[in-house]
Every structure is written in structure tokens, then in C-alpha cells.
Image (cartoon, rainbow, N blue to C red; front, side, top):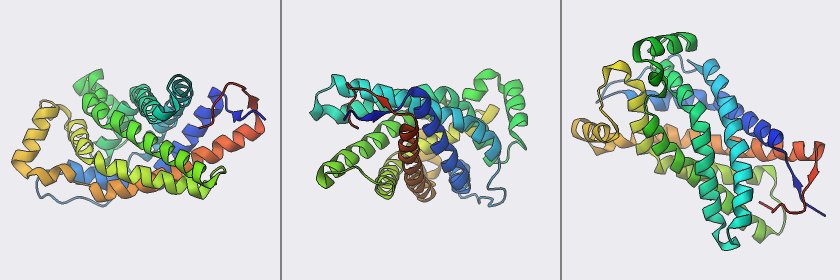
Length: 279
């Protein structure tokens, strides 16, 4: 019997659903992480308003997550057909990076507005968009774009590669499809490991995005040099605890919801594709 595959609209729907669930559930942890990374030196962080900017963030997360999965899934399937089986990890890495690049067009403005709200610079998402555009121009909404790609392309590539490869190995050992709790556990492991590895890149991205028109940093390398000189190398790991917790739990929820939603949509609207490959 041919495997069931999802159409592009179903894949984007499952990705959007998973992204919104994660952001809503774990937003306070993300806010704490951002405030830890944004504060310079030994400054204290504010624990009030941990849901600041959630509504505006969800407006961007939904299309960004849907776009990522909508690009990642067909790209992955195409690359798996091209690459030999022993290079499936390369297919997953490449598809994750391509999906991340496509989603960055929506993710970056969303992230800029979210982090400015999380650090108390603006009162609402509409105010943030209006004031950023008036003070910094349209490019202000893409502040830190280079550092975002520097963080997110390897993050997406590594996280999805770890997740997919662990699923392949587990399915081969168990000789059956994985259930939702198993997908969630694998997703949590992949997220936590990737979150820890990419924390320095996240710190740099946060500093560049929240600096606004002050221009404390002139670019990625200047940001790294300034942080190390003024605060010491450990400052590049600021927020690693909340970040690993947030992305670990988030990975569990995201991949659990993603696989569950994909399965439900496939059962509703199965499409038979003789040439498709198993994940």
C-alpha cells in the first residue's frame, strides 16, 4: 500500500498550528531569556509583563511556521530522492537551512518587534512597527538580519537533522511507526541540544535587534568583540538556561503537535503517491 502524503496546504497548516502552540505556551520563558541577553554588564532584569508582545508575535509566528514547514517538507522529499540513502542527513540539513531562509522574511520583523516589546521599548506591536519605521526606516524592521540568519540557518538545519535522524534510527530499531510521546521526546532532545549549541549566536542576534537607533554595535564582529571586552566571554552564554528549557520543551510540543496534526490531516485527506519516500 502506498504511503500517505500531505498536500502543501496541509503541511503549512500543521506547521502553523505547531508554531502557535509553542509560542503561546512558552512565551514567558522566551521573554526572560531575551531580557537576560539584552541587559549589559551586571544589570538586573524585570520579571513583569512576561507576555508583552505575545499577540503581535503570534501574528507573525503563524505564517512564518507555516512557510517554514511548507518549504521544508517538499524540499526534504525532493532531496531524499536525489541524495543516496546514506546521505539522508545532508538532505535534512539542507532542507532545514532552505526552510529557515524562506521563513526569515517573516520571522525577522516579527522577532525585532517582539524583542523590542519584551525589553519594554514600546507598549504595543502597532506602536513598535510605526516608531521603528519612522526612526530607523523600513530596514529597522530587519535589524540584525545577518545575525538572525547566522543563528537560525544552522539552528534549523541542525535541529531538524538531529530530529529526523533520530526518528529514522528509532523507527528502524523499533520496526514500527513512532507514537506522539516518542516524537515529542525526540523533539525535546533535538531542541535542547541545538538551543545550547547556538546560544552565543542568539545573544549576538538579540543585542543587534534591540539596540535600535543607538547603534551600540556596528555589526556582528564588533558586537562579539564588544561583549567579550566589556563583559567577558561568559556573556555570550547569557540566557542559556531559559533558552535550553524553552527550546527543549518547545521542541517537544512543536514536533509532537506537528506529527500529530500531519497524521490527522493525512487521514482526512489522503493522497496516494507511488513515488514518495518514507521520512
